[in-house]
Image (cartoon, rainbow, N blue to C red; front, side):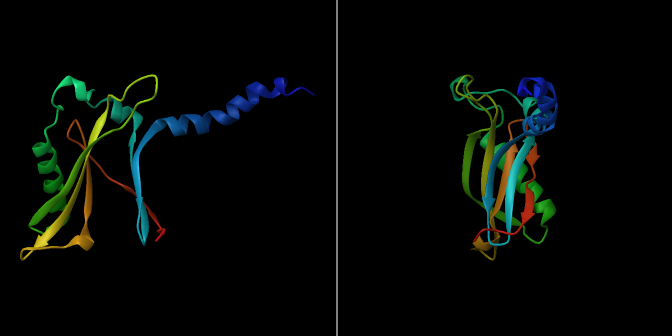
Length: 146
């Protein structure tokens, strides 16, 4: 019995896995002592963000606007903290292959709350802001690796 007879069936079996994998783009993951956090974006959502490359001038969303959006959301989610300090900001590609350069990007902003002038490093937050100004919430999987 030739495997060629079963190729259409095998292709149908594999289709949901391929479609599922193509439905979202994983930006990055981080594992801690208690959980693994994964920032992923549905492909359709990512495709609706502005296309941009570093050779095209300034990004469509400024750093200051991205930080303002991130801190506004953190303050809404954690009203006990009135101030956040930015530890780092990076602008990273969300897509791209060897055939097609990345044209969808996002900001990763690491922040810590501040109380009485003291940074609370144990409560570091990571905010992900797409270039259309929307924030990406992490998917949380309990059980860390540390």
